[in-house]
Image (cartoon, rainbow, N blue to C red; front, side, top):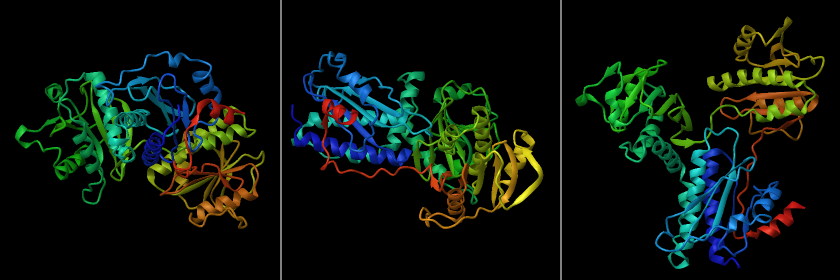
Length: 480
């Protein structure tokens, strides 16, 4: 079966929209699809940015050596062909999120994207892939004469819908289908509150949404009179009330339509919590964090410094595993505090047997960072201009250190002096890793004059240039 121009065009539009939307939600992301249009049709792979590279052996095993996936009878393309998809299991490929299904229009399809290490939850991204599968199936069922060309546009702007779909799925599992909570108004209100200041301050505190029938069971500290309960859509009023629950433990309670009062504990089994942290916040369903929000948008990030590259650098060094693990925890504690307090800082991790000399404020003797009191002291010294100097012995050797070095071609003039000083310093010193915390940028891990934590900005590839490849040919071409 040859793929016609219409199928290729639909795939390209859908994949472009999916990739763009997920990149805004989770950071630079790629996307790919494996599909077969009919039971006896060849399986194809469309992977413009090589997301599936390295997974050829597993895909060969699942789809070429094993024909079990073809044994399912095709769905009849009757009245359900526009909307009904039978889901397929996540393929559990390392580093990937996948979701697929079968429909009357597309016999089998499986969509893939990046599994970023700093995601609050996989749920919204899975719902995004599910919608991509639904859009492709719908377009194939509509055929070219009824094709609207809007699938890519839908998927670019799907963030709030993906969060809503995940929240609804969780809610239905706990409460069933008979619920009066409406999620879209809740999500809209959360975003509006997140960007509404009160006397110049961003909102802090927890706003908890519960089922209306559960309100009567809550032991309120303060229960507002029904006639005095502010409507949720009255953002200014609700924002003022949030100031009353900034203290830990206090929660503003809403039934999704109005604010009922303030409580602390013994809440219903199902809750949706918007936890405002100032310039950002987190959305939780019961105890699970679904996503974060900031700047009027929902995002998948945990908003914690991603130090996976530092962990990998320790594993590749000659450090003892136990020492490397302890050092990582020390650095993580320092970095997370700097990020939370939004101040720039620099850590020099000196892995040499004898620490190198760095100009700065030294001590009579190095201080052991495994001591909680010394670690707390280091957090305070972290705010002083200059770098902390930490050795492989897990001791603090100095602070307010100045990093010097000669200029070299790898510098980035778009970044500040702290970043470029780290590039120069590590370019001239072996066994040294520098962690740079910028007040307005992600954390950078720098080694040998290179930022090893730099995110790969995947460049979009026009689907007019590339085309789906038969799976057998793709495995042969990429697997050798």
